[in-house]
Image (cartoon, rainbow, N blue to C red; front, side):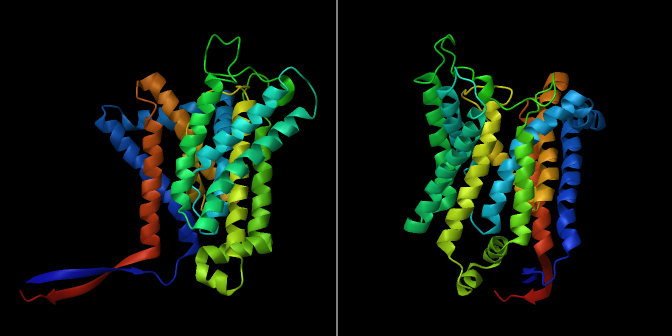
Length: 361
């Protein structure tokens, strides 16, 4: 019996240019596959893709909505990149966003009938601390009890969402809200300033940009960034170099949680101005795609967040004009991740043919 044997081997040398070009290839393959899906559904591919990716941002309002949705994605992805670079896997950013929103919302409700310049900074700080504390739970459990941070952080998402649901239906519900699951409207002093009249984009975008700049400096100009890079390449090497693994785990989870908490602050103190059941359309999970599409690079994450945010807007537009379910956006996000992983696999590994081998029965 004869059979051709193949073997998957790791590449010795990886081109940096190809490393940063594969996300673009993943996006192109997603567009091609998306066009094919639209064709199979009975739509003209180019027209459908136009409604999905061009029509949503063909005016100032649409572009501002793109920035609005890209802001939390960018913030969360930056925080996740701290964990991923150091070989720690925080999958619960959605829960940290929700808990940060709960804590900051509680502070905003505390001052709901007051005005003052100090209120918004307190709300923002509370959200960051809330997200940080919530992210510390899987970090502490991992460092002290060797639990799996993936499972713990993921399960905590549901805990925070159930807590939010309890609060907006129960003790924090608006007494004048006709039993709708929402809180009172926050005072103007507890809300992010709107940048342009008639648009919903708010000052939270400046927090995201500041986070990008600070993270770039930390990654490439500090000793902490070097430690994360070494830990990401090899945990054994990091331990041999004397790096404190437990301290690193706690620190990166704190940073990641704080960024997710800030994203939660932006969602509740922006145009909405209150807590309700659904403060995030799964930004915490989608930001994982953004982080890897941006190659864990702060600048790359900015562009990746814009691309992925467009899938949210495109899904809404396609639902209105083409009667396609809004969950089409999640299909595109899934395809981006699939093609990115496939491209990365071929980037880091190659198929080696070993020739023909005769097997005796």
